[in-house]
Image (tube, rainbow, N blue to C red; front, side, top):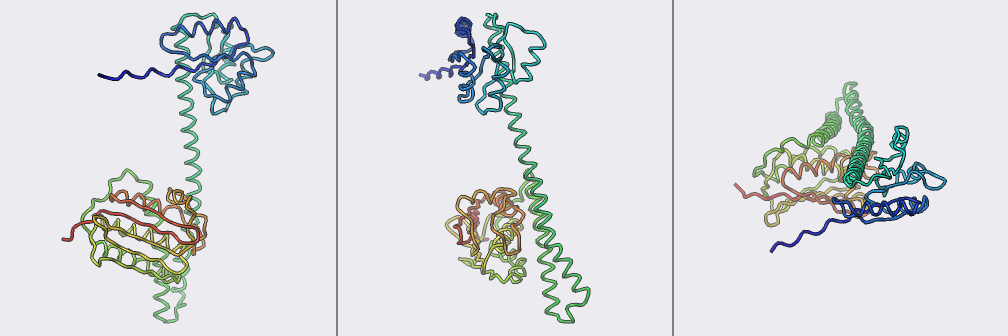
Length: 376
């Protein structure tokens, strides 16, 4: 036997009316509606109406044009902007164009003749006002999200410009030093200059690639296959070795067992490694440890730094796009806010999961879980 569907929730209708006879008439008319079961709330004065409409989210409010020494427009102004504000319908016996225009400007979504006793007309008015209210709220929320996105975009452009300026200045500066013969024929010094130029250029390239990956979320992810995870991690780390050396940070790697296969795309796995290690180098005090392990059918890639870490309640914040931690990194900035968000996107596309763990003053540990693959 099918269970009976629950009865629909009654429509919470507030009526602000200071005439007792009119209040009783409106109550009778609403009780006769066919499409709605009404829960009636009588608010017999301007003060009662203002207090109730500011505190409770009614489904709809009918407001008499005259409320003692004030009018309905004064009440609309008093409750306007409240999150609990219900859609307002003006009750009036004077339906002239000037009144309708004033009502619309004050925030009323429709009007109803106080002498109207046809249930179909009353129902249409209630239905229209509530639908218009929902559309207005949806539009307001959409506009708020657009404003937030615009603010984030403007902040991102400013931060990205700042973060690109640093490594670009490094490229230009060390290139000019080489051009001016500052290496003085010292091959080791020239190699150091070249390594610094390469590291700075990779920083720029990494920022651009991360931006592209975040701006094109609908693009198809690269196909995964069985790849040598140890080799991919080593290749990713090799590109960052000059940076680690330049910052005096020990970059350590351990694989247990020494041969591990993962279901992934080799180039994507290298990017994941480079993003995580680049972020770790930015904040590490002395060392960054990278570990690759195999647990059952899961490959675990762990990157741990000994930097300042972040508070536990900031973990979800720093992995969001364009978010940046409060700590100043060893490079003199807080990063673009792209790295961890980009890793999140890349890992998810590989069928994996990124988890972050940190305590203030104890560094950050990032762990990527990927499906393991059988050795060929």
